[in-house]
Amino acid sequence: MHNFESIKSLFEQRFDSAPTYEIRASGRINIIGEHTDYNMGYVLPAAINKFIFFAGATNGLDHCRVYAADIDEYDTIPLNGEFQRSSKLWVNYLLGILDQYRQQGVSLEGLDVVFGGNLPLGSGMSSSAALETGFATLVKTAFDVEIEKPEIARLAQRSSHQFVGVPCGIMDQFASLMGREKQLVLLDCRSLEYEYIPCDLGKYEIVLINSKISHDLSESAYEERVKECAEGVKVLQQFYSQVQSLRDVSKAMVLKHKEELGPIVFKRCLYVTSENERLLQVCESLREGKVEEVGPLLFETHAGLRDLYEVSCKEVDFLVDFAVQHPAVIGSRIMGGGFGGCSINLVESARSDDFISSVKLAYQDAYQRKAEAYQVDIVDGTDLVKSIVYS
Ligand code: GLA
Image 1: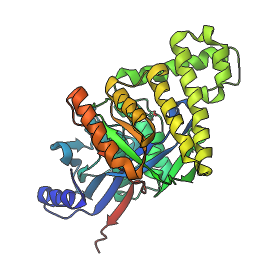
Image 2: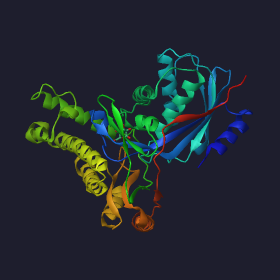
Image 3: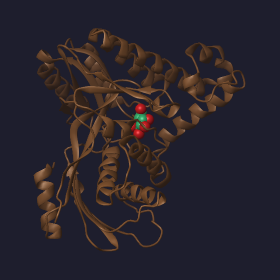
Image 4: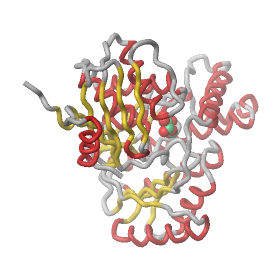
């Protein structure tokens, strides 16, 4: 666990000078709209107060020197010649960003970087997107690149696709950058149009419960889901020429072509089309201040992710089942890519302490694992916090 102070002092110890740039990169939550982004649908994420802090400076060398404080690993990245993939996943995220800037014609020079924070890794809160957006913001700042935040999000997504090999959607990078204090980001992943919806939850609050089952997005299951959805699109195009993605498909169309889709692809398409509908309902309820109506939709999403999309796991199912029974919780579901990580819960603030302690106990009993709970705040997205100008 690091904060800005510890990251800065590690930088000073390692590189013998103060950092020039300080960047704070945010993790994210997602209220609803899971696995809809790469299907060109809607998502409803927000940036949260779980961060990766970056301290950086140019070093006048032909390579970057980078220290990942949370995992105590150091590496160098040569800048002469083609970028070579590393055996370390975190290094590939940085390499991918550098590669994208270079493809855009930015001439890169050596950087010294130390980063680390309080954003749990592999927990569905997008530590990898925070790593990408924080580093991309550092490179932009150090080399004076003219690039706006939505474009950085796209650059980071391409980097994940091309360098890391994860065919992710745009939600994580977009939310990490574009998040705004106390606001949810309603993003249309087809047009990239977005609007902010106030996250006014009345007497409720958001609580994340981390199962501590670590997921790995590069795992084939995520890619498999992307392919299955594409297959669904192909089948439906035979009947509806206007269909370009599952965004153009209604639940009724999926139900009508159950036979042609086949059992697996049918389930995947049914989930995605239902999820887009649920998301729009959630936005309406929030706008009308009817928070109680949001809860049941979160439970429905969980059931869909578990039974139709099949990206949950028994440990997070347990957390959600427990939440269903608890009187303080009005909604709960697995969050993020799946196969572990956190559940997101809508909990009555006055009774959230009771929920947290009882779910932790029950989880420990069932799986001999310590769950962690986070009562997160919604904050601004990734940004430069300080830049020292030497004259
Ligand atoms: C991961 C991906 C996102 C999105 C979610 C599921 O976090 O990076 O693009 O697909 O899974 O909603």
